[in-house]
Image 1 (cartoon, helix red, strand yellow):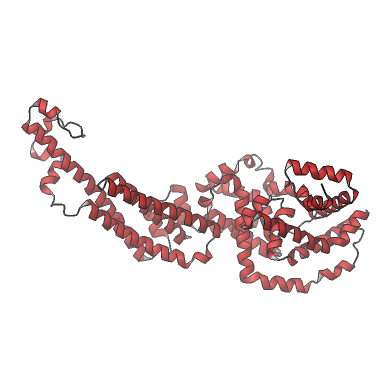
Image 2 (image 1 turned 90 degrees about the vertical axis):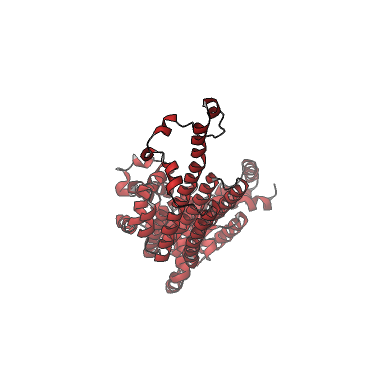
Length: 267
Length: 210
């Protein structure tokens, strides 16, 4: 090893950043080169001086008290961390949330729930009557041939008075005709989500400069992943004839995006 | 070594009583703190307050300001605990937040004040005064020289010098904390050392002579 090369590596040697082989080469050179060994000694002496540097810094108990006061003054956040946070609690407890955002959230939450319930009901309505029809019109052997994946109903149900007829059957006869298709319901819920998300995103964007860069990077990553999930679930819904499971995932993804942005808005 | 040991320990008053609790791993402490366990976050504070505070002091150069920014750092850390992905790198994460807090502060209000403070104390000229043989005075004077020399480094060099020389962070960690590339870390560190060397040279000579 040449002296110049050795000198270039001395600081890294002292810093403990050289790999084993380089470290061995430098050490071997130092053992045989007095000028380089002298420089190494001077750097070590310098290092020693820095090691003796003492700042006039004391971490006093009052510092923790102040921190505790600051974090204790965030009851909503603390509550949400402790309990997992209810959706509404976070929604209405966040001081920076505007009324429009809160209202939008309530609306789309309600629509999401209704949409999901109706979809599930529609599934029941479309399956149960065919099963009942089978039991009314066919003999026992024909009933066993039914292709429906639902469990075979108890034949005694057909003998119940009308007040005890299963709910799904009653809905078929008493509920108003369901005009909205699942696709429309999804679009409706999606629109509400998108509106709420847009309001929050605008709020976050305004204060982007005030946010921690590390957190911003993580936020962008999280939002990218969520957007990808949304795109994937939409695709799955299209390919699987509005599969209710895909719908659940889609709405969950929107909900997650809302939560992420809400956290930032609350920050 | 002494500083490293102190950094790893809790605050002196609670060191003994909390010794058992300090055996908690960072992963455990973070998990508990995320669930709202104040004691866990207190332990994190106890463990890292001093190194974080010292680092901030290196960057802003003022004790009161360092204390205020340390407070801000831990409050911000608390708020962002969910955002910490690798719990094993808690220290690096905290230093990253501290760096951001310190830099933001410098950008907004402190920079001018620091400059005035440095101008008010032209300690460079004091290097003409040879260090006294008295150990305490020598240390005090040396501390002041190092403090002011660090303050005179530009911000990037100050960061890497503090993180490497005073906090023994690896190049990789420094790159993660600062967002610099490793070659830049090395270059800035080399230049920072050269600038610092010029300032402490009289003490180096004394040290070599003794």
